[in-house]
Length: 255
Ligand code: SAH
Image (cartoon, rainbow, N blue to C red; front, side, top):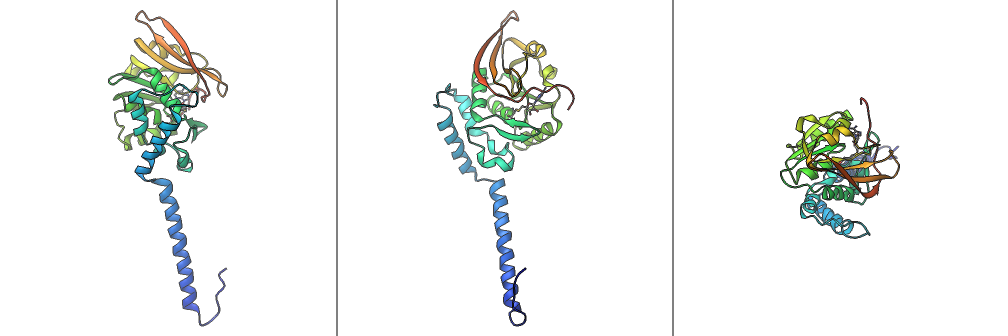
């Protein structure tokens, strides 16, 4: 494979092979390091760029809530995205997280959090933990965040990630979120990050009077309506369509 003259140049030849090997090792370490740990300041710049370019124009509802903007500037989204897609972490796009699921695009996370009107001290339930990113954004605003994931592997990896990144106040549970989470009920706010065919009655039941829920309603992989559902003091329901969106479907049954 490596063409060396037979006798007198063994040492020279060995040196060249060693140099080549060293070069290859340095290159692979470099590739690994740059994929795993992008410089912190560079990532902060990326988040600033994301907020400036994606949240204020493009003919969309602007993101203006100071707490939401601060949360989006703070949470390291690149650490919630698989390393294969890390360079796209702050782009205006959803990304795959395995098991046929996706982390929503940053704008949708910000829009849903803003529309829900989450305030410090509120108790919030999320259905569809996925990577844990939306839960981390919520946890920047209030320490009382509960999140439910149906796929065991995603539940395990998101629990560990949230713990490792210091979001240890977030309560992560595995289960079918159609039934909500009685452990923390009733909630001030509920956010559903997968599309349901209808508003699940158990979720509405777990809202406090005066509470709000945001949920995409419609068939999986079709255009769905993003609904803001309010519960009045008498337990009555009103809902309003905010946007047309595309979310992965809310799954049912055992996983
Ligand atoms: N909020 C996530 C992305 C959500 S993708 C994030 O920030 O990364 C939708 C998630 O909902 C997927 O992880 C999917 O497994 C989960 N899901 C689907 N049906 C569910 C159900 N019935 N209960 C709980 N989670 C569900």
